[in-house]
View (cartoon, rainbow, N blue to C red):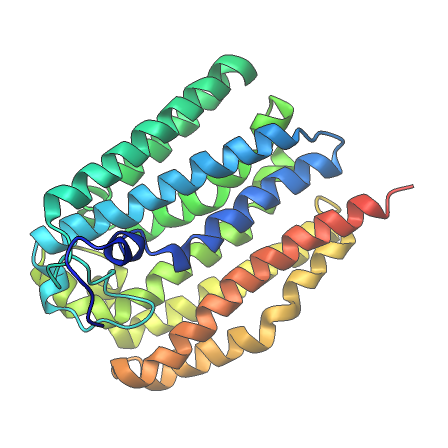
Length: 305
């Protein structure tokens, strides 16, 4: 951990792990792009949904840091640029109470934004927000100990955020948007999944239960590969069935990065230091695929007659 002053602005900036926030930015943009492709776009609602979604993501990151510190996980794990938390609490740069209240305030503000959309766009949004809020705040307390961490990560940073961003533009849901959100959800699950490899032993000691713990790293690498392949398959199926526009096939442009992530996971699954490049390739694959899907919808919109 680099040398920083306790309580400094730098410590507060490091705490929410902003380098993961592009995931939310891209997925909100995807849901909005799908709505725009169908003829609905309100810039103010887009910005408000973006702010609320980023605040929820910050809540997830900070509350995870808080509970991973309290449970002793981050005191035992081998940190990488992509896993192991921010390091702010183990380093003593902020105290746990400060982190807890930071996350709580972020969630409160996000809830106000969510209530505004429920009142203005419709009550059908409320169940989605309820699941998202529960997942964000109680991930470590319950979900991560119920063998459901990967599922809820993919659900929240996949169908829920894409459908929610679409709903605040259109006031409705659609099967087409749900299908288009499946590949992004699978990719997000895979982001968490591979990041759990370096944390397996520390997570086990801290009381977590997830697929990497249950399967072991050697078997889990096959699941990682299958999830990645399935995400590409859903993009192809979406285009073949004409649920998604042809131009969304550009989402397949990350295949080479995906192959490198798979190759690294298969070779270095039990060596954290050598696995780091594969973790990086996985992040590029996930963010790149989701961004290209968004771009596909934007270009398809502009090419409409």
